[in-house]
Structures are given as structure tokens and as C-alpha cells.
Amino acid sequence: DSGVTQTPKHLITATGQRVTLRCSPRSGDLSVYWYQQSLDQGLQFLIQYYNGEERAKGNILERFSAQQFPDLHSELNLSSLELGDSALYFCASSARDRLNQPQHFGDGTRLSIL
Amino acid sequence: AQKITQTQPGMFVQEKEAVTLDCTYDTSDQSYGLFWYKQPSSGEMIFLIYQGSYDEQNATEGRYSLNFQKARKSANLVISASQLGDSAMYFCAMREPYNNDMRFGAGTRLTVKP
Image (cartoon, rainbow over all chains, first blue to last red; front, top):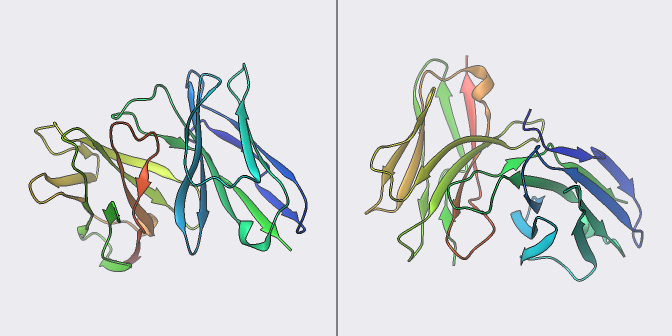
């Protein structure tokens, strides 16, 4: 158990809809990262938050947004969903934003768009 | 340009034998971190081992060790005494200064045969 909690584990929805994925980082971790894992693109970094502030953006679509709340949990919002958004979405956390710190991953949310 | 290259899409190993999973990386930074993760069929990402670019010793964690050859820019994972539960996807990843995300390779699927 990594200590990172993601809900829900599975999500099935239709094109055009909007969903929210939730993440609770490990106790004491300030940094939260979101990744998307798909068969054709592999593991892609989406966005990072550190202590409530956006720190870095990766290959995140404009239809996607995220935030980190004062209690450090984070949400990833996906809107106007398309079939290609079907993927496994991971949240990861680390104590600080340093090179030598591993990111600990949650179990992921598997999103299926019908 | 591909930052992390894992050239073995699939590997087979006999139970109780050792196996090496290859990883090469590309960076112009002197300071960086290298990580290996395991992803079983259930989907979660499990942190295995870390190697810093300035570490003089190869990292070891139980049955996992990292064969770090800085001049060759390689960071191969060695799993000793393979077990059936080691069957999974294995990802090599790198973190560089000024990049907040972790760059992952395409992964190697390891199958341990009884």
C-alpha cells in the first residue's frame, strides 16, 4: 500500500460528459502529480501541484483541469470527454519536490468512455 | 527525443534465476535521478529502487539491484532469484533538474516461468 488513495477505481461514462477524479496523497506529502497511461501513449505527465500551487504542466489538454485543496487532496477534472480519453489515470505524491524523492503512486482510476 | 529507452518489450526468466532489464537514458544534466517501478496486472505502480547520478555505489533493495553505468547512460535493473510474483511490467524513469515530471520508458513485460 503506497498510502496514496484514488477514487473511484473505475469510471464508465459517455462522450461529452464531465468527470472528477480524486486523490489523497500520502500523509505529509506536499507534492501531487497526475499521469495518464494509455496503450498508445504510455505514461504521460499531466500536471503537478505543490502545497496548493500549480508547479508544472505537461501534456494536459485544455479540456482537463486540476486543483489541490488546502488539505492537500487533489482533483482532476476531465470535461467534454472523447473516446480517446479512455485511460488509466494515476495520482502520485512525494514529500518535497526534489530529484531524489520517488513519487508514490495510487492504484489509479480506470476511465472508460463509451 | 526519447529520454528513456527500454529495448526489451518482453522478457522471460525461469523461477529462481536472475534477470536483467535494460534501460538507457538521455540527458545533458550532471544531476538526475533514476527510478524503477513495477506494474503488476492489477495496475498499480510500485516504486522499487532509486539511483542518484552522483551515487558512487549501485543501489540495492532486497532482491533488486541497479547496474548503473554513468558513462554509458545505462541503469539496468537486476532481479535476483526471480519469483512468480515478479511477473509484471517494469518501467524505468528519470527525473532531471528543472523538470518536475518523471519521464518513463515504454516498459518491459517480465514473465517468470515455473
